[in-house]
Each structure stands twice: as structure tokens, then as C-alpha cells.
Image 1: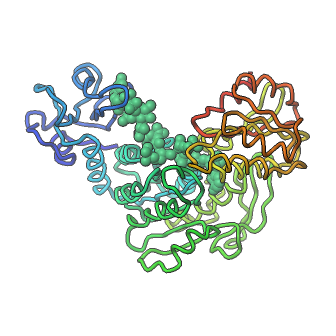
Image 2: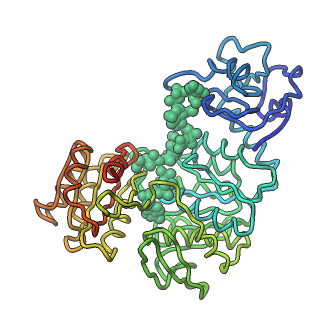
Image 3: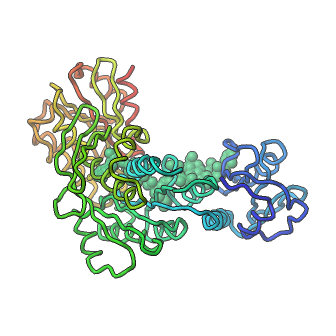
Length: 459
Ligand SMILES: CC(=O)N[C@H]1[C@@H](OP(=O)(O)OP(=O)(O)OC[C@H]2O[C@@H](n3ccc(=O)[nH]c3=O)[C@H](O)[C@@H]2O)O[C@H](CO)[C@@H](O)[C@@H]1O[C@H](C)C(=O)N[C@@H](C)C(=O)N[C@H](CCC(=O)N[C@@H](CCC[C@@H](N)C(=O)O)C(=O)O)C(=O)O
Ligand SMILES: Nc1ncnc2c1ncn2[C@@H]1O[C@H](COP(=O)(O)OP(=O)(O)OP(=O)(O)O)[C@@H](O)[C@H]1O
Ligand SMILES: C[C@@H](N)C(=O)N[C@H](C)C(=O)O
């Protein structure tokens, strides 16, 4: 993490006031929350929805362990006798501090965006690169205009590669992030429907994701989902100095799976580029595609394919992404409840529908949020797309998911589909249907907090 004297920090962050009497105060790391402050941190206050971080500045320096703090110019009465750097805007100051620090490092960067799979692919890519390099990666979901700068400021001076997740919910955000990160390789996992409410169309989502190329360094690698027409058509006339590589299920891609053997807790697969058989300890064909993208990035940075199984072997995905567990009745549970969009919902359902070794398959599906005016139709189509021979019961939670139930009843009939407005009631009824030969998929948008059903099944 960043470790510099205050005088340098002030210069990097665009400080407006004279801090010379504190010039030698040592700053180590940055925090935006006094509740998570570490000794020596620079505290960056923000005016939030519930409170203003500025009110914690004096205490966090005097008693909380922070070495110094920023202070936004338009907030009155900055403490005079403390190491406080006054700046125009604390968000911009944080971002410029991160930019300056990143540019001071001898660092390779992989930038990852896409509607689904950023966090998963980030975890995979970091694991593969760790076979050769000292690697740091985005922690959790810190992928936006604050999270990415904070990630950069956590990078150690001797780190060789950073894997950065770049999220967005509107046009222009990815461009900002990629120009901050300046990646050597970028991955665009897919174009789904996430944040359709803000972007308005999948075409606009594709345009927004492709902004990631604007920060790519000279002769960098552009890895994208070649089965996605919206990406293919936008890159077919690409004239930049980057190198294009596609991954996907189709043999028309540069990199594709040849044989796939689903296992109980993962997948074995071979590819068109090398004869090795790979074992990925994660369920889902979509995760094989994520792995291919990660493999292309790692290979570009010098990790040989024959080293990649070691990278996969130690893979632990960020929680609530295809997270396997067992319920109180011996049922297997797939907690895929971090978030949901039609693309990720269908990918998860396809996975369960095609799993073998279970006598009963139950889907617990909740609302998919931020889908815009066609949201009800998206939910209905999830229901009508089900295969009655591969799914036994459907439990839904939420107002929008009533449309899933309506569509599912057309396929499975009235007696195999149950709609709920209360998670506790859903959980109590669901427990009557699970056995030790049952697989349960739990999936919904973050705002539905459907992991509470997983917790109920485990009691
Ligand atoms: C600035 C901040 O910290 N925001 C977080 C805060 O929000 P809130 O406004 O409620 O803050 P408060 O009013 O409570 O407090 C004001 C500040 O004071 C600090 N403070 C408070 C109390 C105290 O005792 N000490 C203090 O120091 C406090 O820390 C505040 O700074 O709390 C929310 C709830 O926890 C957080 O959600 C909020 O975080 C914001 C959203 C944020 O951007 N955090 C980043 C670090 C981050 O990366 N978060 C990720 C999620 C990122 C994300 O949503 N990504 C999107 C894609 C990108 C979309 C982007 N364009 C966008 O619009 O967001 C995605 O879909 O993945 C994470 O947390 O996982
Ligand atoms: N390539 C993919 N295609 C479809 N669904 C996917 C793909 N990769 C992951 N998913 C699913 O998408 C959901 C979110 O996964 P993950 O957190 O990796 O994505 P993300 O892009 O980081 O999400 P966010 O935008 O919230 O950060 C999970 O349910 C996961 O199973
Ligand atoms: C939480 C955020 N990353 C996200 O994915 N939002 C959508 C709406 C979801 O939770 O499905």
C-alpha cells in the first residue's frame, strides 16, 4: 500500500493548503471509513447519505490512529493544528492520489469488465498469474469510481501484477476507470442485461463495456466473448494497436472448450489450444468460459498453460457465486444469490437442469432488479424457458418473480410452482420438499438478500 511522507501525499492529491509543518508525517495506506482505519492511514472523508465523514477527522487523527486526513474545501473549519490536507473535492483527490501512485509503480495490470463474471474472472485470473508473479486483486466488489482507486492505493510497491475489476452503471464510468488503471490486458466477459435500467439497451451496455479499450497500453491484449454479436460487430473494424483474442463456446473463437466433463464440484475440460486437461473446481459452463478468458490473460503475461491447473486448484471464488453448501436435511445448496440478471439466472438454471446425481431439483428464484421497462417480460421468460423434465419445483420470492411463477406454471403445472412474498414462509414450505438427494439453486438480485433462505435451510 501507499507509504509516503505527507508532503508527497499533498502534492499527489492536489493539496491547497500549507502542510509544511507536518511535511514528514508518515502516511501508510488510505481509508474512507474510520470504523476500519489502520494505524498510519490517511483518512478521506466524504459527505454521505447518512452522515459527513468530516465530523470524524479530528478524532480519528487524535485518537483513532490515522496519520492525516483530507478535507474538502467547501466544508467549514478544517482543524488548524492537525495534519489535514485541504482539497477541492475529496473524491477527485482520492482518484488523483491513486493515479499518481499507480503511475509510480512498475506494475502490469489486467482490467476486467462485462455484465456478468467480473468478480469470478478476476479471482481466476489472479490465481493463474500467482503461479508466476506477486499479484494483488480487487477485494470483494470494489469496482467503481471509489473502489478502484482504493484498490490501487492498496498495491504494495513490490507487487508485479494487479487484477482490477471495472464496474459501471452508466456510460463513461469504464473509460474513467481504465484510464486510471492503464491495463496491459483487458477482458470483456459478456454483454448481458445488468444495469439495463440505466443504459437503456444491450447495445449501449456493449458500448459502455468497450470503453475499457481506451485505457489499454500500447500493444495490449483485448480478450472478449466472441459469441457475442454486439462485441464482434463493434470490433470487426478495430484499428487500434491492441491485439484481439476471442474466447467462447463456438469453434470460431481463438480459444474454446473441446470436451467438457461436469463433475460433482466442478468441471474437467480440454481446449483447442493445448492438449492438457484442466480441472476447474467451480460449477457451470459459464465459468469455463470465464476460465478461458483468465487463461488468455495469464498466458499473455507469461504463465504457461501447463502451470494453470495449479492456479485453478487453489481457486476460491468470492462468496455467493455458485457457492456450494449442504442443508440440514442433507440437501445440496447452490448459493448463487450475490446478484441476478436474465443471463446469469439462465446460466445458473441450465447448470442445475443438467446436473446428474440428484433425484429432485428445486429452484428458488427472486426478483432481478434494474432491468428497466421490460422487467416483467424478462421474469416471465425465465419461467417459460424451464424444462419440466429437468426441474421438479420452483419457489419464487418477490413481486417481479410472480411473473416467473406465472410462466413456470405454464410449463410445470400449478402443483410444482409456489410464489411467496415472505422469505421465512418460503423457507418453511421449502423444507418440506428437500431430501438428501435434492439440489436447491438460490438466485436473485442483491437487493432481495435471498441468502437468508440458504441460512434457513442450514438450520
Ligand atoms: C463514500 C462511501 O463510503 N460510501 C459508502 C457508504 O455510503 P453512505 O452514503 O451511506 O455513507 P454514510 O453517510 O454512512 O457515511 C459517509 C461517509 O462517512 C464515513 N463514515 C461513516 C461513519 C463512521 O463512523 N465513520 C466514517 O468514516 C463513511 O465511510 C462514508 O465515507 O456506505 C454504504 C453502505 O455501506 C456503501 O455502500 C457506500 O459505498 C459506496 C456505494 C461505494 O462506492 N463504495 C466503494 C468503496 C465500492 O466500490 N463499493 C462496492 C460496490 C461498488 C458498486 O456498487 N459497483 C457497481 C458497478 C459500479 C456502479 C457505480 N458506477 C456506482 O454508481 O456505484 C456494481 O454493480 O458492481 C462494494 O461495497 O462492494
Ligand atoms: N460468463 C457468465 N455468464 C453468465 N453468468 C455469469 C457469468 N459469470 C458469472 N456469472 C454469474 O453472474 C453472477 C455474478 O457473478 P460475478 O460476481 O462474478 O459477476 P460480476 O460481473 O462481478 O457482478 P457485479 O457486476 O455485481 O460485480 C453470478 O450469479 C455468476 O454465477
Ligand atoms: C449489486 C450490484 N453489483 C448488482 O449486481 N446489482 C444488480 C441489480 C443485482 O443485484 O442483480
